[in-house]
Amino acid sequence: MQVKTTTIPGLTYSVQVEEVNHLDPMGGLICYLASLYRVDPKTSVRTLLKRSRIPGAASDMQREFARDGIQAFRRYQTS
Image (spheres, one colour):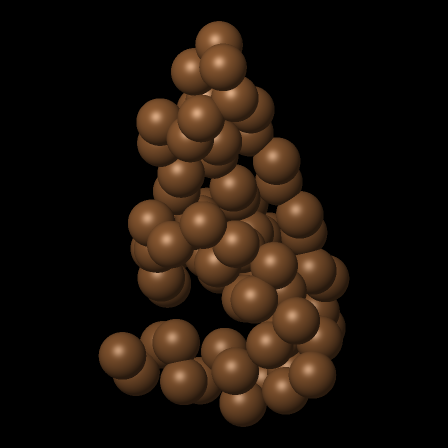
């Protein structure tokens, strides 16, 4: 099982994208999970914003935050 974590720093909080892949010996996908967290810089508390089981969702989330910034965060916080 592979876990890839990417942190996108911000002024008042950080956004952490965590991607979990689990492959069978033949290379087939068994499990995929992408989670998006808001990380408080003072306490390091992680708050789950969004979770997806669609393969490739983590890179989509990262691109959206790079493109839209705080507006993307607000969209995830209200949904």
